[in-house]
Length: 176
Image 1 (cartoon, one colour):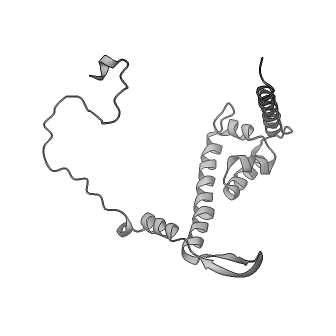
Image 2 (image 1 turned 45 degrees about the horizontal axis):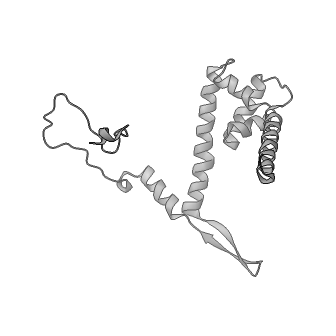
Image 3 (image 1 turned 180 degrees about the vertical axis):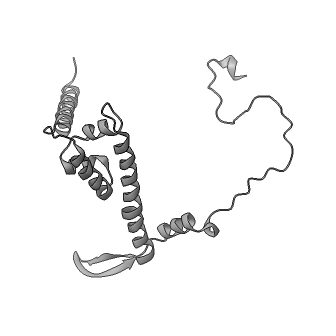
């Protein structure tokens, strides 16, 4: 017979599973909204601004699965999928890149607290973001890797052995 502690753990697990199932139903149940061309335009604008399909679907009041069905599922609209890719790229370039530039080049104001009270502000910069942007945009900041091969490869056929990828032996005799 299980102890009281084991029974309590089981009950907690059951309750968690029930709560998770209920939250899943609530999350995916939205009133039916027609996903017509007008809603698709709203969705695309929201996608460019918010950067996730979940947020864009929520913004226009449709179920994220409905939007997915129009992108890749049974109601697939290739033009819509292509435009989603364009809008995500737009978000990445405008919002993310803009934020990275602001932190790396312009810096951002961070509050200074003392004794729980705001006493001032300081300008903080992100050296790492700036370094990554320089590497991405200017070739002279990228790592130079020489991939030239000097020598001769004498194998015309054979087995490529990659250390650390060998399967585990199944018996002690296989280890020899």
